[in-house]
Amino acid sequence: MPGPVDDAAHRLHRPIRSYVLRQSRMSAAQERALHELLPAFGVPFVATPVDWPAVFARPNPKILEIGSGMGETTAAIAESQPDIDFIAIEVHGPGIGSLLRLIDERGLRNLRVVQHDATEVVAHMVAQDSLAGIHVFCPYPWPKKRHHKRRLLQPSFVRQLAERLVPGGYLHTATDWLPYADEMLAVLGAEPLLFNTGSGFSPRPAYRPETKFERRGLDLGHEVRDLVFRRRPKSGPGVVG
Image (cartoon, rainbow, N blue to C red; front, side, top):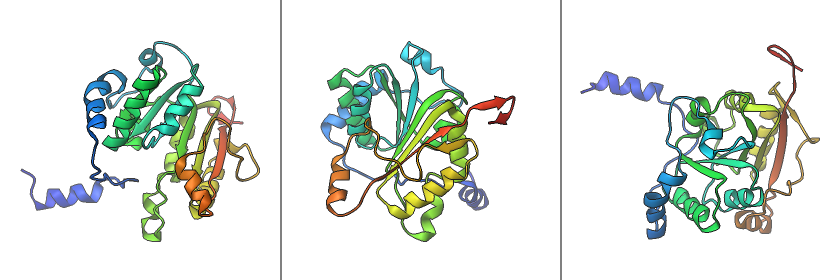
């Protein structure tokens, strides 16, 4: 059994998480979906790159979504783009259960779910130069200054995301928290593998539906700001153009 010193060392080296696992109540339908549908539409975490074309049984473009929440936006985007395959990452059980129900009810065969920490999924399960796009919609802003280190879009993680895009692939982020939006703009703008497709913030792309959360925020004066960056083309071996 680990002693006090070992426990302290574990805490010291434990990675900083961008989320807290809430003890949310799961409905009977969500629980049933987790039990019955996750084996069909879930992809378990593994520490090696996944052959995503084999998972979907086709070579179509792949888009990764980090933090699919309760799944309404994820399912709507996947339904509207049947020729693109989507990989949704979420850690909260009720959200996974809700998304699985939507997959089943709408007959979505272009959407799979990974219930695991996104930073580990990106680092281990997604090969470099493999994604057509990445969505990060409304990550928790951790508004208190002492918690800013827990924000998801840190420079090191943005670099990993950029490396997993194909040249020309896009990274689309959105938030209704203006200080976080400004930080995202600075962090993404400082990543040499990426370039901004707009002059600062971008208009909401047509494929991202306006959510109930967003409409409530707009009623309160909280405007959602979108950022769409693309990976630069490669101009030579190991050289970014």
